[in-house]
Length: 442
Image 1: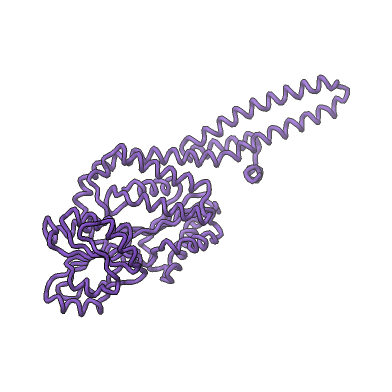
Image 2: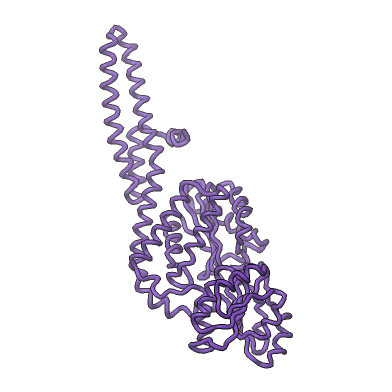
């Protein structure tokens, strides 16, 4: 059984490709169900955020050859492509794949914020927990992925506790506000801000805007009562507006932050054509932090319209990330230890069937020899026979104990060396692969 992660993220693919394989929350149950239908999948979890879409799974070991691994990876790539009926070729060169300890380390890096666009960002933890809860509801995770997620969350907690990786951290939402500050100056006082979308990211972004002096904040959302709820939570000058008023709001706003869960753009070039004329050369700054994107890329061609998407935010956060980069080494030490512990746990599961096989082998030999003894010496009194049976049982248990300790030690050492030792133990006890597999199944 192998642990595998395959996906794309902000380091390997532009936003226009990432949005093509984004999986919304309501799509997760069906998507997980389809994924589990792949014949080699045993467990699976899907993590889809604005910066990544990743498949975590355990797969049946069909062989250790590179060809087998490549075929399985290609099947996962084909699956990703099928989500939006895009060409699998369009994903080539953008997809990464890791196995076993490298896969475990990847999730722990992700959970700890080391693989995020903004180094050390904390929102990914909630996203991982959400993906895990969805997989639990779909009954697509089992023993291996349960333990992996728990190990990753524990490692992330230790990284945040024992390092300064998250010191002064800001989220994608606050990075968007930082970009607005660079455009308009240290204070946003006097600027009218429009928040399109009323989810968690919109809430975080709006609060950062307020901390920078923004007072006039409009919140527009397709579901009006959610816009009202967010505006009430923000207080101050925040006002809820109906989505039908979008054109009017765009005409009067200076800064627009877009973060909806819509599957298609909600601000189009045709909508802005009329808006731009009514603004009379006043600049309009749109910051689109949604994936899929909320704003058509072509609006950037309009006069006095300045559009930034989530990939543009990388330039904003480079300096802050560089200041925290020195903490990466400390975080990696924690993660490496957590990976070693997790892999040792996995290897302990792998050797358990062999321990069972050794004990069954010894028990079978004991029974066989006792039967021979009874047949050869039928005159031996039952009392003496019981004594010999007890002695043979004690001897068998001692041998089994030494063998068990040796097998368990293999779970704690380097995999190649462990494999050589286990092969030697198999030979010593005359074990065949089918015997071990039988022990595992029973």
